[in-house]
Amino acid sequence: MGRENKAASIAELKERLVKAQSAVLTDFRGLSVADLTELRTLLRKSAVEYRVVKNTLARIAVQETALAGLGPYLEGPTGIAISTKDPVVASKILSTWGKGKPTFAIKAGIVEGKVVGPAEIAALGDLPPREVLLARVASAFQGPIRQAAGVLAAPLRAMVTVLAQVGKQREKAGAA
Image (tube, rainbow, N blue to C red; front, side, top):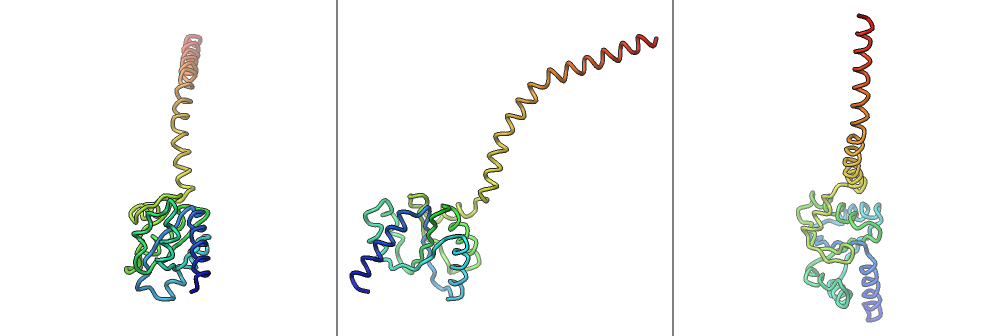
């Protein structure tokens, strides 16, 4: 790889990492070509790019950025899954897919510009889907509103009950 190619590769990787919503560093040791092809296909369906990088070039790419904390994780074979749209999708796919592969490991990652460790990536992978989280938030907002509506409707319900009882008493008095 010539100097110009290395410089272009470094600049491209730096640009992709800075623009990424999330990036997950993986150790793909022990995986077959078929396994990597399967992983790339899964990631591509969710608009996530997976590429194998040279650690030296990756260290240079992140060196002068806020992502310099990735440096210590750039050891051994390294693949990077980069997502520019959804900060959680790469973590979900890699965590789920990696459970069946004992040699596959998640090293670290970037989530919205912050370097996080493998535990945080795994936690992101275990989050429920976005729609479920939004439904939970919506129901949390609905609870107090329902209670307030119930409290405001209580005097009206009480008055209707009292009027119904008065009506029954008058009917009994009129029948007697």
